[in-house]
Length: 383
Image 1 (cartoon, rainbow, N blue to C red):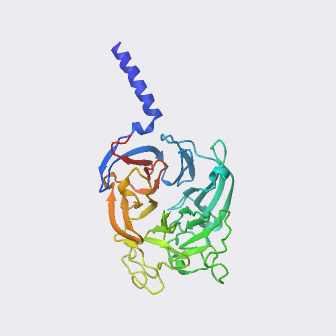
Image 2: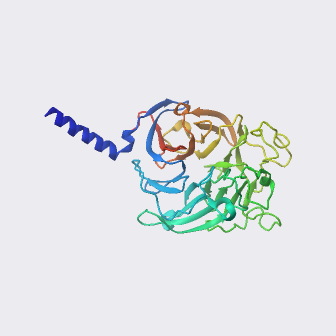
Image 3: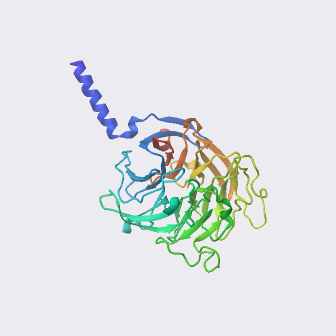
């Protein structure tokens, strides 16, 4: 009898744990400067997840770099891949990358994706497409391309690829320099090493800084970037804060302002992977200085301003993940200055690809791995 009762109890526990994936995962407690936190594994089994966006009902859209878009429920269940996702060039750093919801998603159900698009003659390039999430939430319908980075390139690195919608409905897209074409970051006839600004349908806003200028792409907002993989709008000023990879040293935090030149590869606080010098030094007239930089590099990815109440000591901080650095970084700000850096969760040993504030006021992270996870940070003591 006791054996049968034990078997029944074990089966019930297994059923409960299976229905609530969070309960099946070990919890990590960590003491940070401003809060004692618990790190939960909300979901796992994602292949190199790259971008995350919250649906109005609390579920998450998550991209996997090989080319899958999935919905993950609030309890951590990973649902089958959605249909209607464009074919991607999943090689090197390329694949299916960021995801964002249209500001009017409740009305139009539009989802935006960035990805490395396979093109003719072995070329690829960062592309933005949008499609309507169907009523069953099983696929995208009417998926169409709204923007293509030009020119394409044969290499597999530096696609950039973060999306950020502004309150006026325009869309920022960050674009990498494609690594071996880094000098093109200064060339306004290309989209390489640029941040562009477009309308939701891909058309050009008439107030973009280079509209009407001969020899310049009208979509360009700012230039001289290397590989921006973090982008977030400041909650007060509304300005775009961009976090980009440097080479060996020189990862940067910039405020991306209209028409400004951020210097890559003419100026940088890093050196080449070979140890060789890049450009002319760290400063040149007419080129912007970063508001913060890392040397040595941490390989930052993802960006989010914390604005909620669950972690009062974090309010106003800018967060970014770190790939090579394998940590979460919190930057304290005073206006447009970084006044303090805190490095967190190094004990996890995880490449943090993206960081987002959830509608519940908690912080969510994506880990970049074959068996990638969604991690959730909550205050210690909170259920």
